[in-house]
Every structure is written in structure tokens, then in C-alpha cells.
Length: 482
Image (cartoon, rainbow, N blue to C red; front, top):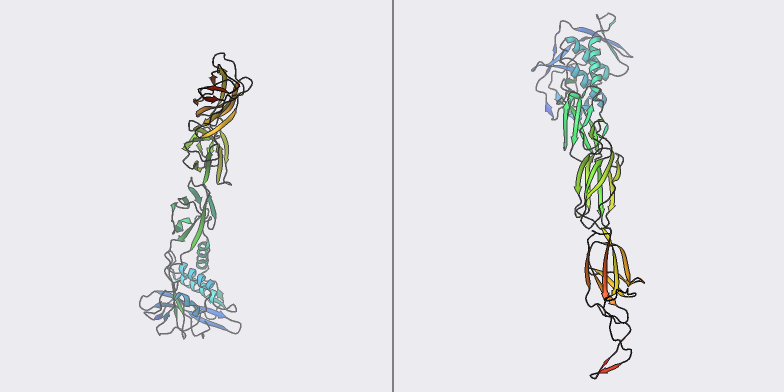
């Protein structure tokens, strides 16, 4: 940029640096314009007045912008710079971005084909690049006073640059999503039409003008990137050590912005277990709305007391009700294995966004029935106190005890099923029952009553007796092994 001022050159330019190192295919030339104006460069040390002229590509006749006011054009071939070599021009990133936008919205932008836009764009480029102690303005003659030329064109270019900086109102924001309703997002800045999504992944996006409707199939946070619709042709800079540096006009670098989608997927998990704390399968629950359930738009999706879903526990004792809305619900147990009691009252639960997954543990008790055993004399119905019984269910002894003063044994809340009664010891003077008594608790009655009798022994000696050379010993009680 620190080149000797010789005479003024002006040109159009592209905005992105080329991806390859090449040699320019043609030379640049001055254009004789009958409307040529003059401009004045004022510095702290001198004032120079120069003619304002135009530069173009000899072959394509495409106008280009020059980057330094008052630097001579070389007739030699120019080097086309790579993107990362634009520093040879001593341009900062902020300058590069600005002059790219000036050239884009300058000459040849739709509606900007008047030569005044060329002049205005060139002036804006120079004002950004030249040192702070320089001042450039146009004059109506070489000796005339300062004239504010092209002010409308300058303002229009600057307005478009300012609008270009504006992105949709929701850019950079995080949106929570309940995993059910589509997310509807409106752009209050009305810039969305200029963008399109470039990474949808598992996301479905419906875009209409300045509104989005988004649905995700993923339960994890998603980042969506939107890109401006321009394709972003690279700007081209042309460089010579001993001459003017130039740039060609092109499309702007594609601007991007991102939004994040955070799903919270409201779920209700039920863990069903039996009285021993083990998972219980084949239990059916219904999920009911305790109040009107509304979606995120405030619309009623389930009226009060609606059965929303029914599910049955699997071998792990679990069921999950998914894709729920916030609101008040009830869980009702509808079916259970025949030996288990069904819960008589519903369980209330409030689904809130703060707790995305709620888990409720529910224990089922087996159905029970009371048992009463009455022990009597076979003939007289006299109650027999102190008879020793055991009650077995499958391979487990669930009771071991004696009849009371009334000759009874009472056991409450026995689970339904098949049992057997074994008489372990009887009282003195009675025969013990040799075979067990089998019975079934089926829950049809509140109490199952079973009467058992013992036969009294007619002759019970208290001493040893000899009979056919055999000795019999009679004891007060007789005991049999099971």
C-alpha cells in the first residue's frame, strides 16, 4: 500500500481470494470516460489533485476496483493471490470483509448499474484502506471547492451492508422441545428467507418465508446451521509489487448462524414389583388425564378423564408412557395376575418439564384368605386342645403350632393357592392322622373353615404288657415324622 502516487485509477472487484495460485490471464487497462471527475487527496504533508479514472480487464472487459488511490497501473501480468495470502496487500480481516461488501453492493448489484455506484463504491473502499491522516473527496474542477458527490449511492450501499449484518431474530438461541409438538419459530427480523439449513441430520425442517417448523427424531441436543443463500464465489485479488493492486467483484462469503434444539421428552416410568420386591409382569395400567391436557400452543389435546394409553408390564416389571405433555395425570391399575390384588385407588402424578422422567414404584400384594382349623373328637365332637399341626405350601412350612382352648387354629391373610395340613402330634389317648389334608384357598369366602377329627383309642395301658413274647410300650403322646 505504500506505493508512490502517480495518477488515479479506479476499478471493480470480487470479494473472496482464489483457492489456487495462478497467473492472471489478462492485463488491466484504463478506461477513458468522458464523465471523468477529479478528486483531491489531502495529507498532513501535502495535497494532491488527481483525475478519477476506471480500470477494467482487457479480455473480459469486466470492471475492477483498485485498492490504492493514485498508484500507477502496471502493464505486466498480475499475480492472483490465494485466500491466505491477502496479507500481502496489508489488509486486515475487518478491512477485507468490509471492502468485499462494498464491492458486492456497489456497481453491478441489481439496480446499481449507473456509473455513480462505481464511483461511490470506489470511494468507500479507499476510505477504509488509506491511512487515517488521509482525506479523499471529489471536486467540481481541479481548482474547485469540495463537492459531495454520490451521497445517495453511498448511503444505499452502506444501508445494504448494514442489512447484511442482520440475521434472523432467533439466531444463536436455544429452543427447548417437548419431543411431541413441532417447534414453530418466527423470524421477527424477516431475514430467514435469505437462509437455508445445511445440516439437518435427524431433523425435519419445514421452512416457509420467515417461519420454521422443526421436528427432531433424536433425544439429544441438536445444533442446526443455516447458511445464506449466496454460493460464495471467492473474491479475487491481483497483486504487483511495482503497480496498482486490484480486486474483482463477486458474491459475498456465505454467512452462517446456528440454533440449538434441546429436547426434554416427558416420560413416566412404572416399576411394578411383588410383595418380595421382585419384578411383576402382566400387570396392565391405564394413564388418564386428571385435567385437560394442553400442548405447547395452549390447545387441548386430551380432555379431562380421557384414557391416554394402556400398557402391560414385561418381565422386568416396567412400562414407560412416553411423549407426554405437562399436566396432571392418574395411573389406574386395570389388570393383574389372578393371585394378586388390583390397586383399588388411582395414583396421581404431575408431569413437569423440570423432571423429564418420573419413576413410580408400585408393589402388588397377593390376594389372601383367612383359615380356621377345628380339631374334634370323631364321635363326641369334643374339641381337642394341644394338637400339633403344620401347614405347608409347596415346599415351605408356613405355620407350626397347637390348637387352642377351643380346639382351633386361626391364620389370617394366607395367599391364595394350594396347601396341605400335616398332623405332627396328637394328644394322649387319640390316634394321629396318618395322611395330610389338602385344601385350596380360592378367595371366594372370607374365611375357609376346615374341621378335622381324631379317633379315641379304647384301651390305653400305662404299663408294659407281654403279648406273644412282644413288648408294647404306650406313651402319653405319639409322634410321627413327616
